[in-house]
Image 1 (cartoon, rainbow, N blue to C red):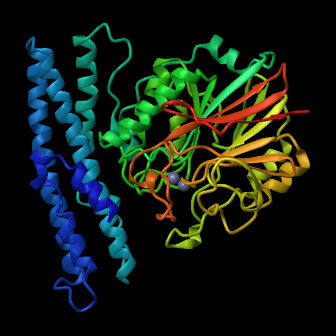
Image 2 (spheres, rainbow, N blue to C red):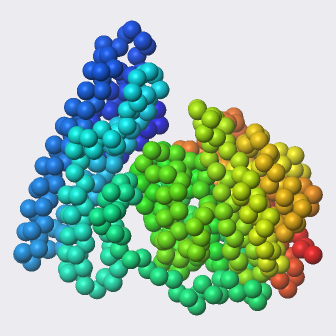
Image 3 (tube, rainbow, N blue to C red):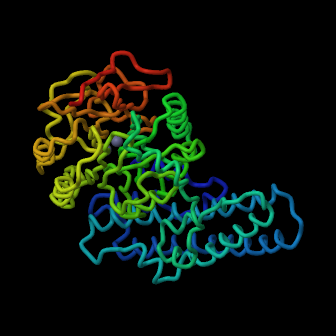
Length: 480
Ligand SMILES: [Zn+2]
Ligand SMILES: [Zn+2]
């Protein structure tokens, strides 16, 4: 149902008749057995016809753009014409992605209810030579050169091929332009253990749709406001930041970190359960996000890793998504044994250890709330894989902060260790979701600050919203 809403919102209206007929194909699948007028074979051939139809439009538009491009190159055309050309190219890329997503969704539903050969949309597209990517890719490369020629004052290329994200074969043909590299002196100051204090801001559950909506923009603006006020050494995004069910391409992560890059603020990220909830990219693909400018985790090839912020040792843990066997996506995965082994063997550094991940562990259920709101029962994995026991034994993590439960923002305590939540940052529809829809309050969106001061040995945390520090959220403890 939710994809249908995203589909309606994201299709480019002037071309609406050329998209595949997603809703009617879907309604055929929804009819109870015996009532459907189409048998499976006919349904599949209808889908293929639809794909061919949208492909014909794609080819025609691609050819038109090719002609237009040569005109733009030859003549001294105005900037607005180049911009218009780029917009059309973007729309064509989106057109392809939306159709691909819709077809994948349809195939998935159809595969669930039909006992026959499973439909693989990628295979179908390749087999029938639909959506010739090299054409679009070619255009994308050429337009990048044209942009550099027309706007020589721009030092870094302003376009990247969004299709590379969706289709590896596209990436093989056109490597991404080289990213802005880190300033080594800044990187050093982030990790300098002789620094007296470290400040981290956690944002969580932004559920970014990448649909140019007011809610998407509100989330980005809030992040910017809080960062400008708190001026953290590092920003940590703890999952469900992009919503894979709607965002179309993880390359949209660039939009989220752009204000941080502009301000030269370091950031890092661990995924939640929704970031990769799509057929378009995998959790492993999300690691490419680490190559964006000012990511403090550029060194890491895993989401589970550690980095230092002055005297603080930050542990980033991938709490994984869903158990593969759960089918209906109801059961959450847990922190795996190899991750716990990695943690146990990883050297302890600094004066205080703080862990960040997305899905809370079972011990959250029994922790004693020190401050903040417990608006819902912690939604944890069913299986306890022993991460907390490992922490109790090693004793170098003094606090942990997760996201996932949009209605919880408390800091609890168990065996002297803080088990806390961030504050939900997003305003899109899933960010407002709660199992407890009768909940009386919808918290103001915000972020959590975690600060350690080496001089006073105090670890403190509180919640910031658009209006400043939220009353009654501040808590401090001594680290010995
Ligand atoms: Zn969430
Ligand atoms: Zn979640």
